[in-house]
Amino acid sequence: MQYNNEIADKTPADIDRLVRDNIGLVKKIVRKFKPRGHHEYEEMMQYGTIGLWKGIKAHDPNKGKLTTIAYRPICWEILLYLRNKKRAAKHDNCRVYRNDMQYTAEHVKENLWEVLDSLDDADKSLIDDLINIPAYANIAAKRNITTQQLKCLVKKLIDKVRFVI
Image 1: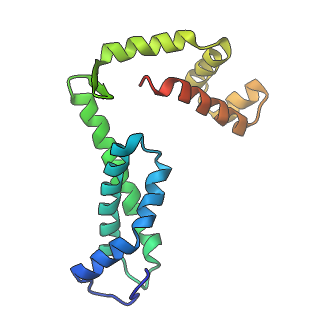
Image 2 (image 1 turned 30 degrees about the vertical axis):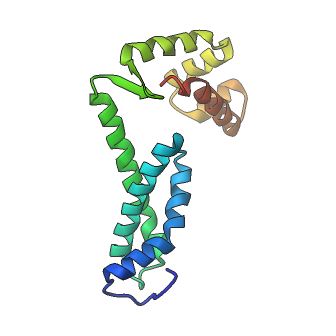
Image 3 (image 1 turned 135 degrees about the vertical axis):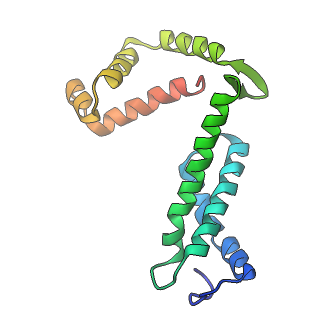
């Protein structure tokens, strides 16, 4: 907290000032969630600011720094937004919107299969291992690579398929 660490009963003006002064924490956390596009970034910022506000309300200077106390409420509010967004997409008559175009779940499924068919054998093998072998360590051992190398491969594979989902 940048101003008065001894604020016991925070007034609305104190809370507003603390929100403005600590909005950088929200921005940092939102960037960790890697929002897709400006709209999603703004939505996450709004939910993160609600979390910051809740963290400020719950903050007791004797128990720790504001940034430490507010971190979890910010994350939880962003996760709540993502969960609700996922539910809304699920219940929106099975439709997906991208770039102001509307796709049915069947269209996305067809495109996903096209992308999966276009993958090379190494990527298909990795997908098969990810489905059938429960632990990264076991998959890495099977492929004679480190777990970190496996995580990089999985990230690249997800990036190839991500735009379809």
